[in-house]
Image 1 (cartoon, rainbow, N blue to C red):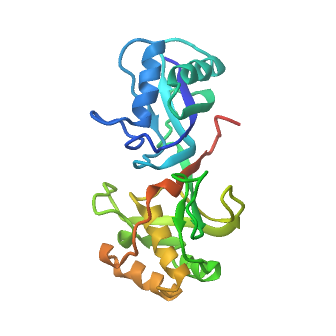
Image 2 (cartoon, one colour):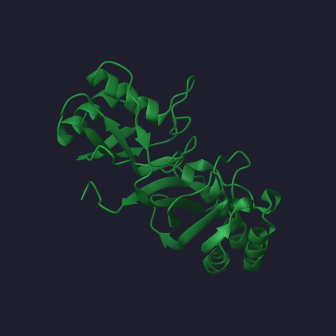
Length: 255
């Protein structure tokens, strides 16, 4: 059975998340339904990571097995046809080895969080950014973020329903920069790690926003991390500004 890697872009607003669910629409379920239109029968795809309800993706990666050799381009075109009108697109496909795995073969995952700091309501980007009304101190947020980079117990910054075996993760990098947006300048948080805990990115960004407004000092982030206590975390920011922006592999199947 040929195995294909799929690079996937989606707007998370209409979905209850990536993972297949019985009673709610999911991105995984939408793609599996499209596959069933090509090859009747049950299909199961494996994603590189699970995104929550309302979270978007610029480059999620999944793999699927098919009973016939479609060819990568033909498969992506056929899936995109059957995914319409849902806001999901296969932007690239590639045939991979039968033991290649979208999740377990991944070496890095990258997230982008878009924040719009202005008082007037967002119009064109509503539902795609997190809007806050106060100006934010980027240098203070960078100083706070520096305490989180490296190998740590991130109990403070993970959901109480996180199913990971351990709260210990290595956060490789956090960058915080301004970027142009349709509704004005945005603040972009970019985070890199081999893997993330449930709600880790949203917990970190929500905490750093408190630093940016001056309600927290940068050193408070260090104390929150050391507490290893969910109650020490700042507020968890909403999902609409979060994007899975990329997944890396030793041998990139799409290169």
